[in-house]
Image: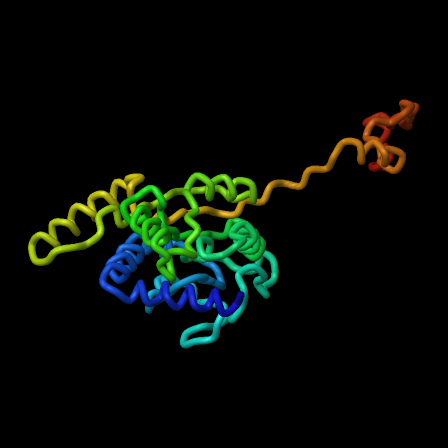
Length: 264
């Protein structure tokens, strides 16, 4: 299983090294630049693919860790995303770059990400949009038994939102990129790129890739009332059972007598 995962990500890295993949990676860097500029903390972690340059390099956080399931150049942590060897509430920002779509248990991966993320930590999830031209192309390649896309399990944006809500994460925004794949050359290609940039600024649902921005919410501790009743005998009541008798004050001496004592 580990060897199979390694082959999938090696093929995905190869896809990102091509013209279409490099174009998509550049658009993802532009879309995440402002989000990563405002992410602060001590540790940032990226899972999934890099495309030659991890997105976490854009963050001002100094300690940047790239995690993968096999050892290669630039890998700081070799681990399975299903079981991250990290403490809970320890990572300030996490970038999950296609790490949910090529696994048999994406919900468990997302659960691990939520576990290691700090309260109010930032989460960026990059995934292929199945409702797009790129999604239809990858699905057709999967039907034709392509070695990479036949193992791709598309995760819709709606399902991802539901999972995040169940895990106590709030979705702050969604960015959609790559509505028009680059093709042609010269001025025609520049025109296609301009139209695609306009569509990305308006975040239309037909974007080939979505970037979900979420944060981890921590609810206040809820103490059930029945537990308080069971310990009522140990609680101190703020209302006294019986009203204490008022204490009598000693009569104050008259002011004239006090003055006489002082002059004597």
